[in-house]
Image (cartoon, rainbow, N blue to C red):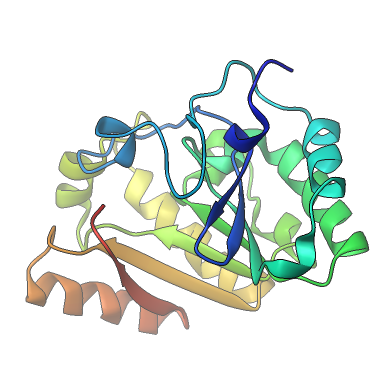
Length: 204
């Protein structure tokens, strides 16, 4: 493994984040990757090679996990691009540490993996945070630019709704300053309609 360890596990506020991949099916106009190569207390989050589940588990074993409030799958790529590794690592974490596990995702994991994945998260992930980003498909296609094209927004909404049946907490998010107040209210309504929470995350 060529990566610096803090390219794989890195700290943001009181959480420990897991960077599994740089692959992503989206090209969001506001993506952090457009303006920086690091987040929080990390080295470059651009990976020389994707870490194996064993690599990540070894790094966890070398850390004092007690000082973190949560563990988050989130990096410079879409974590569900590495679904098998994500699930294996999450199971390892549940077996060894008493910490809530959050998945930050663009919500297109069903399209990435060619099957519904929400049921696979049950018992392994406590919170799923999904980047809704916009209240309409037309705006979504313009701002998020998913490689799957038409139907991506609908797939995101279906995934989010399925997650509410499988995961204790689901949060739909948008980025501050990118939407009007009316658009944010429309996003909040979408979240409430499926039993999810809504959060406006800071523009960074």
